[in-house]
Image 1 (tube, rainbow, N blue to C red):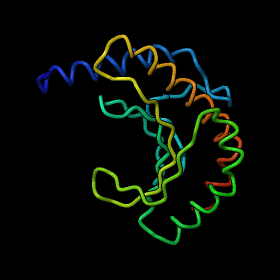
Image 2: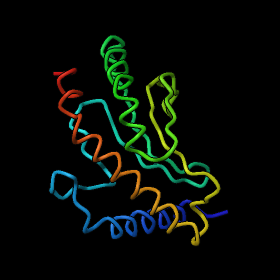
Image 3: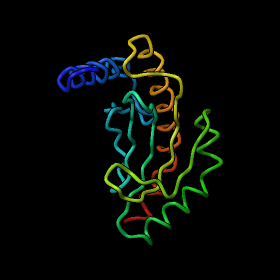
Image 4: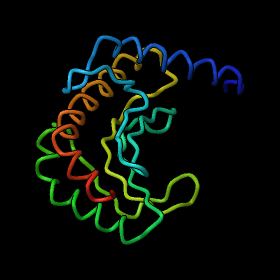
Length: 154
């Protein structure tokens, strides 16, 4: 079992090496992007990368405090479901009642990689490739349809 400081060090090294993998990659818009904190440009929606030894996933979290806006936003994503799933080239999981770490019920669309472990060095390239592929696929979808999503909450 690693100490808290060793886990922190490993975490920093993992994300630094992933940033290096994505360093020269630009968005479909041609702009540079901080892929680790992908800018959704829609308040209360987040693209999260998770790799913690238990789970490795790319998650699009929808967490509006207003249940009405949450429902409308989720419904619109449902309208785009077929396009999103075609672009992602990886099984998509839709969960409108996901309970996050803070105990809040949110909507989560995610892509999970199984049989890898953040604590195994030999799995890092596999995890990095998974993240890279999903981020590029998500970006292609998101840049095309983000104006629709932004207009829902403006």
